[in-house]
Length: 380
Image (cartoon, rainbow, N blue to C red):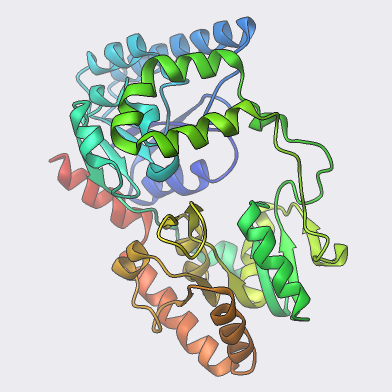
């Protein structure tokens, strides 16, 4: 099979999605539309994005003419994909799938173009009724991971650390929990983008044109599906200036390692006694308003054989057996108790890590996901 993947450049998409299709035995041509899921909303940026749509359509037509286009697999929002482009891609009579990995936070950003795809594959099952109301056909496809190959396994040397490792961004709740862990004198290492940034991240800005766009196209469906309180919270966040970086002073600077190279990910995960994860996404932690969702980390770390403690989550329990494949926590006191316990019992850590890796290899690879997707599309 010949697959055209339409993705952000850099980050997780190519090494997971394009690579997963290749491991299924498909040939893959990648089309990159930028480094973020949005676009530059300036006049120049809008024209650049339009030309990008033109090139995407040209690429798809060329591959179709060459007999090398059996499926278009995209991870793209309405911000980038123009409705007219989606219509013309649909007219090529080639199966099309858009993969949506953030239903809790950004479910609405495919309402204009999602109906032109054969399926919108969803990593979660939130807001499906709203998607269907927009004539979108959702298909449940949780995230996954690619196993290490013998080649990159042999070249990976673990970076040993007998403590807690966190790899990710400095979201407010995560910063607070990590600060509390540091205060407990537990060995801690933190790596990720923006931890050493001292100025606001410009990518977090919300240009007025985007705000007007979202008000025009998404206000009513969001109001109907989310209610005023959630929508008002969104408005307040967008009216603020770019959020500043507010790293807790409770975290000693020597604990923060900053960004890490993708090539170091496996070495860090495999060498750490404990890898820490968060499924918290929205709302007030540990209250009825809190919303949690499974993300890529819940598969990447176990697939590498790393011992993983992450927040409990309904979806997580559907995908893993808690206690056997993954250790979970719900509140800070429970987290500290389990960290201290497992730091003292390496044999138990190893048993769980091995069971989790085996489970992922058997059930949660991208090859599994794509094979099932092709069955859903009746492509054999």
